[in-house]
Length: 181
Image 1 (cartoon, helix red, strand yellow):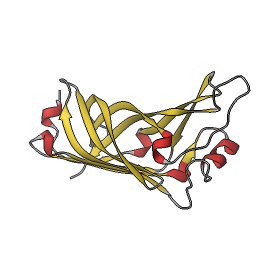
Image 2 (cartoon, one colour):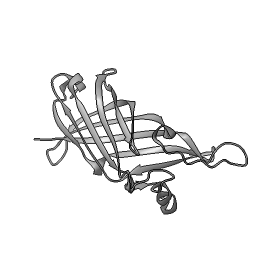
Image 3 (cartoon, rainbow, N blue to C red):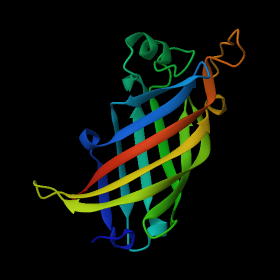
């Protein structure tokens, strides 16, 4: 069984077996889930995990909440302003073990031209060789951000109190990455 300490090389996200998504409270009574369908990323690791580097780029226009009207609204200036800011990026600044099968990844998240540090706690799901001979690794994790910290300021108050969209947004990752030759 492969451990975190044995990961060494360049791993590229396989978008057909991964998901980058988010969860927001809607009308303060339910949650809306969404994901992005176009993204790329890689992790480069060496003998020392502390030297690992992770970069991810998400195409914001690929947002998908299973509702075309809502997706269209998310692409506007009320939310993502995808014409002006087509990408969300993450670049790690530190990677450290947070347990036998966990990583704590700190880095810079950029949304709508605003960059702020975040920390992701990732659980290592393991490593395997797939039927095509690809060496794969898997990670899952999440973090919570405040959308207003990134200039996503849409606000609609409800008659019953509260707001239409929560300020706190949970980012969720399920990543399968393939080791490069």
